[in-house]
Length: 404
Image (cartoon, rainbow, N blue to C red):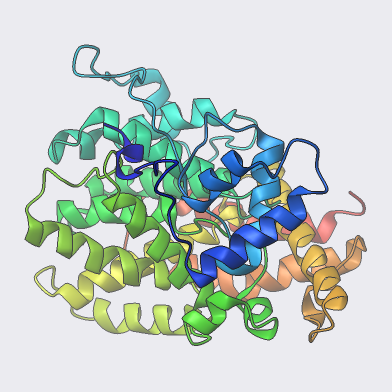
């Protein structure tokens, strides 16, 4: 059975008693649903009440309506596939394409132009060695990838394409450095890839500051501490435990626990508020790095994911510029949301379309964060001279650009 096997549909004669929170959610959806023809029937509300919905049984527009309705309470529901039949199975095993693998080893793999279905196929290639090493069920892996894909919201920047790009960048670095065998155990390398893919799961397209200032329920839940990163990590762990998506079941209970203990702090390290700590801790650990020391290995995990998360300036200028404009679009949208909600405005994010402001923003980001971060990483891993050259090329490119 797939992930939906957990869901037990109630009998008509034996309705499920909604909790107070569930009743509020259903009331909100019913209220919103009245604005849209065909939404708000008892059958649909019962499906929503059960929370777990098949992404293949609802159209995109209706999904967005439900996301909007649920946003203030739980940010978004968990969507996952209950399909049993995928392209690959024990009778039709997955065999990677060497040509595609070679393309995926390029730092300038053009993620944005690819359809999601093609990127999901690419992820099977990226995870192929882990699938073999840890005897991962290929059907579960496909279902897990679909679930991750569908639980990224359609933000300009923090979306599935960004998640794929980060995971693919980790892959390129890992391939250049013998799968990080000098720094990580094989299981931890697998955890790094999973962290990269799920590090922004269900991102709402705003910052932690927005979540805190708007008193979003997630900010209350996580005590204003790394609000979004805690949510991303918790959502990723949730998927790894869902029957049908539980790709770690071939591991022992102890190893699964170890994976969880690695993934959570690695995702939490992507909080930009921790940038200085991540760098300083890495510098400290690398003075006398010992692969037998778990703290040292965790520091390596943290800095690699952090560097790849903010790594679009290591791409060639044509690609890096697109990603830069996408994050600026999110910044501009957040400023508008802050004004609409009468909460403190993040003035540093008020960039607009002024080319001079955009240039200053991007050059400042490269100088303050990206160049020092990647220079530090380049002191300890091999094969990234072209990454550093691209950072410098991009800085010069922003200085020269006159219009967009």
